[in-house]
Image 1: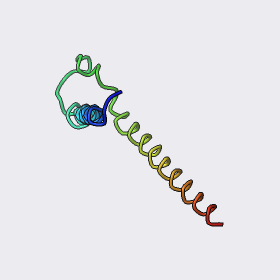
Image 2 (image 1 turned 90 degrees about the horizontal axis):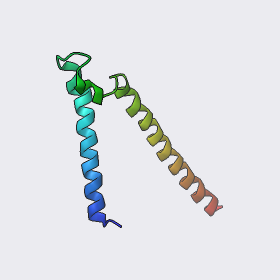
Image 3 (image 1 turned 180 degrees about the vertical axis):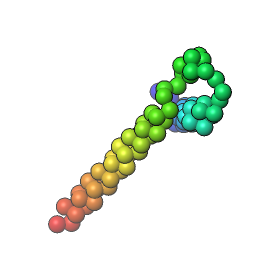
Image 4 (image 1 turned 30 degrees about the horizontal axis):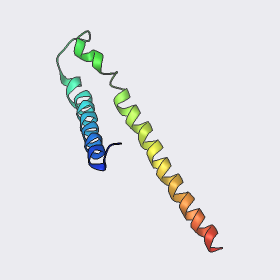
Length: 81
């Protein structure tokens, strides 16, 4: 089992890699003057997914936080009664 420091480094490296991949996909790739058939475009999905995927993950994340909060607020209310 990995220690907390090793796990933290793995999570940090993964987050940085995802950030740079997304940044290149959204901020650099649309402005590059390359053909559609260029092999570099094979590594990236169409640009419309660059906005759909984070939106879906954001809605799921905020919904999860809301459900977690409502559950704990409700459980505190039940304990008091």
